[in-house]
Length: 174
Image 1: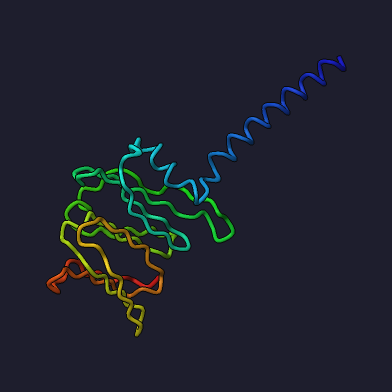
Image 2 (image 1 turned 180 degrees about the vertical axis):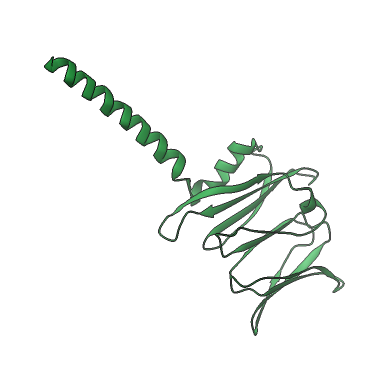
């Protein structure tokens, strides 16, 4: 009888240990340094594809693209909490509008927003407004770009080489 109780307790302990490990691995997400590899594995993105990425305090956004920029995939990761160094993938896959324009991504529980584009509109500059402060970021007209912006940004305007607006976004302060 005593041996049966010990055996039963051992089996229950082993089962709980397996459940705990599975829960821990799936619930805690991936480390920041592992996001690119995680996205490539999940979306089956070839190693030969280039990546454009940017990271804020809570969000990381990436565009993976082939050599001739005819095919691409995106991945957005959000940090679980301020105390955590692990991220969860919140969106991955194809978004056709990124191929022709600039797409803004935001999540209700994340104060940052991401702007992704294959840069078909040839944007060369991003003008980022934070109240009275203005920041200029240079972009390469021949490469896709990703910008992750803080919650204090009120407007982001993208310009092409001729000074034409390639995208204009008023952002809601959260």
